[in-house]
Image (tube, rainbow, N blue to C red; front, top):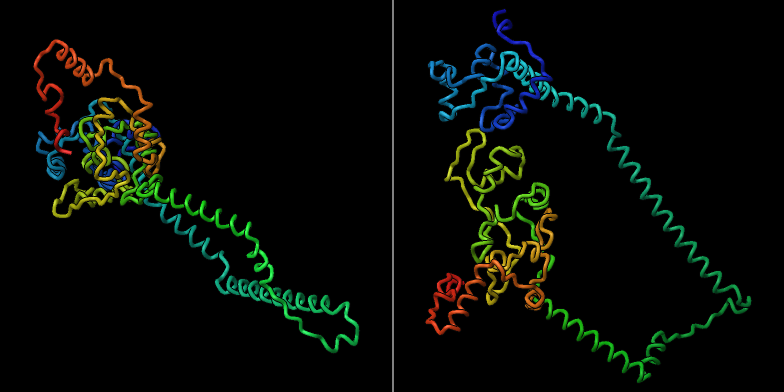
Length: 400
């Protein structure tokens, strides 16, 4: 009776709105996030008066050396929870009622689903009936094929003998037919033979040219990656800037593959139930329940490279992104629409040269070209110039 009296009665509908506004960023009902899973935690706690004090001002309980408060505080590495002094006792009661109601529904849902599945399973036809029907269909198909073959043979015999006299039916002479006579006749036609040889040479030469031209060109190449990462979702729907992940694109030769720590900036709390996100956790040795890392279990993700230039071709991302001001889509295509990345452009020498011929250089307001203008002015004045003044100290001059 004492435990029931300690439980507060609230409005679950009002509690849902308060929960989403105040609690959902750190808590889920059934999975541990920054804080504990609220469903089992609040359901197991019978003293709602203490829960109200903890939610409104947990720091006061910790300062007062409350045993329950200190246990939670130490369990979560002394990471303090936000205080919500603006919530009234009624507001807290609404939140508690919502959590208990929803968590109870979540526990009952699998049972209801299991009963439905069992009923559906009972109503399905037996395997013997299915195999029996398949056997009848197969046998009927074979019988139809045999009858059609027999009918066709009889029709041929009737057509062959329809115009023969009765006395001729008794004795038939076998006449040898040369089936290659038509081909032999065509082979003697010199004009036809010359045309065939010429067409073969043209077709073979064209095929050889196209094959050699496309050697080592991988346009459309789309390998399967170890983790299903959607650029359509992140760059398209979420509008995340490309350089948030590929930070090297504007300052170095390579765009760089983002480290898994960049992924964890969001996915430590977002989509934690996804199997693909758990592949990141496994690669980092991260335990979502304790939110701790075990470096002994860490291993690198084996990403498959999509865009790969030959060793003799030099390409610098920063020159194109920072200096030229090109967007990523200029070379990589509509990356914001790709669920799985593929090589959009051919990346051939001809393709690069055509782009260099057609692209206007934005000189005004560009520090690189302003420096070149300054160098030319100094040359006109006859001043002494060093290699450093002309960009000779850039790392890329020596370190490809």
